Image (tube, rainbow, N blue to C red):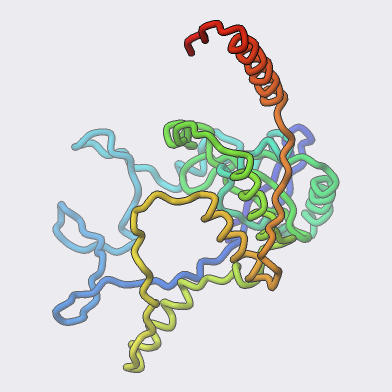
Amino acid sequence: MTCGFLSTGSVNTTIPIKVTAATEDHSVKFHQYHLDDMARVRTRKYCELEEREVAAGEIGEGYEVSKDTLVAITDEDLAALPLPTAKAIEIEAFVPYESIDPIRIGQGYFLEPDGQVANKPYTLLRTALERNSKAAVAKFAWHGRERLGLLRIKDNAIVLHAMRWPDEIRSPESLAPAPVDLTEDEIGKALALMDALATDDIPKEVAVDRYTEAISDLITAKQTGKEPSHAAEEEAPTGAVVDLMAALQESVQKAKASRGESGEHATVHELPKKKTAAKKTAAKKTTAKKATKKATAKKPRRSA
């Protein structure tokens, strides 16, 4: 937990706050060990000049300007930086939520009012954010660098999300597949699959970390000398070309069956036909009529 200030900038309101991580990591951690004797393999801090292991209190941070030059940077140096965000979270603007690309939103932190004096301005800001359809964009210093942040409300607390800078997001243009032709039936089946899997919230059975549970069971089995459970063998993909319509239909049937619904007749959306398609159809009919008249007059057909 760290302490600091939440500043609303132009209003000149500073709110003392405590910052607490909003999430927990429940993944199973592994250690490295020597295969021959099961001894732990550890990472040690070693001084190259004195050729000895050093304690944490003897270690500082610095920036390597060149191979032989290191500039030492202390915590005091960072705290004295001429930046408002070095000591406070500075709210810079309020923008529409939909303008924030979710890919830019990262780790979340709860902001807690620090002391009685912070309660009223904290509650005022929280209430204003609750009633406003915009997101608060802020700047703050974290782990040796200035970060962009997003403020939102969860229950009765203000949450600060770290955000990536625009130049930290890679362009997906080079990853996009080449253009392909899709039929209305294929799109309809895909929409039917989405309908079959649609829910108002994330299902409880989905919000379960089965991998961590399986790892825990594996550790328990090995610790007690039992045979660990093994996954059922699945047939390897044949590499054959997929029948997209058949695959979509099968997915719809499975989705409906998992919910106890009848999967015999999938709901397929009727998509409105494009005007261009209607024009093309009319053009084809006109061309067909002309071709019939010419064939009757025994005139030679035009080449395609």
